Image (cartoon, rainbow, N blue to C red; front, side):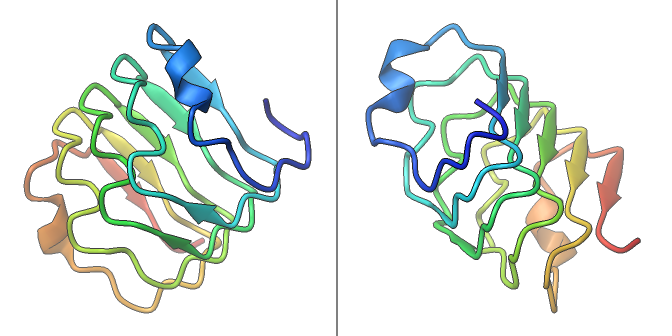
Length: 122
């Protein structure tokens, strides 16, 4: 689903893919991630959301992604990350944030994770 000029994802898109492990949505034009957008994707380990137009996301958007290990959010337009954004991601090891407009990151938001690599600046 990468590089398809998608501007949004239907609210039920994840209903048909509960066993999905790898989801590549990079290179689209998605600007907002809604609460529970990925609610049925409990097996996803790797999620690519890089190179979109993400400006905002709700704090519960990744709530069901407890098994995710790699999350790629680089090269978007994010300026703020809600404090509880990564709370459910206890297995998260790699988080890529470079190329965004982030002005402040509270590293307290990562206390529940075992992140080995967080990239913010280039």
